[in-house]
Amino acid sequence: MVDAFADGLPLTLHAGGASVDLVHVEDVAAAFVRSIGVLESQRSEGPGLSRYSVSSGRDMTCTELMDVFHALGLARPEITYGRPGLPARRVRPWRGICVPGWTPRIGIHDGIARLLAHRAAVARVTEAV
Image 1 (cartoon, one colour):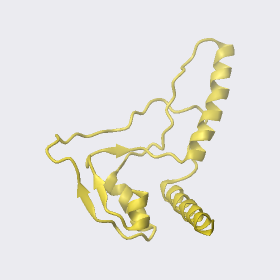
Image 2: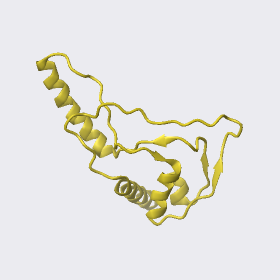
Image 3: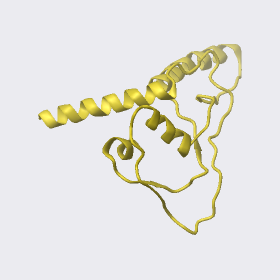
């Protein structure tokens, strides 16, 4: 999707009803660090939960995600729908108990803006080489 919006390439969607729960990599790293502390404290206190969820708490459809890119000033790509004939199905992310004491800090708009800025910086460096 990033390539389609940033480079004007066509975008093929296969599961129009699918949802994603996007969490910025910095937030994911913080969740893993926090979970180490939680699991270590549980070990000293006795058995505890050993599986946690890292979630933004918000599912987004492809259409909603495309709206974020568009809100950041990028033109909508040409969209095609692949794999005709496959049965439609709704796919939702798994969500369980979140890591205690952790919450995501980077929102979807800021996270995508950072991704696009990083992508542009890498392209500039690559062109300079």
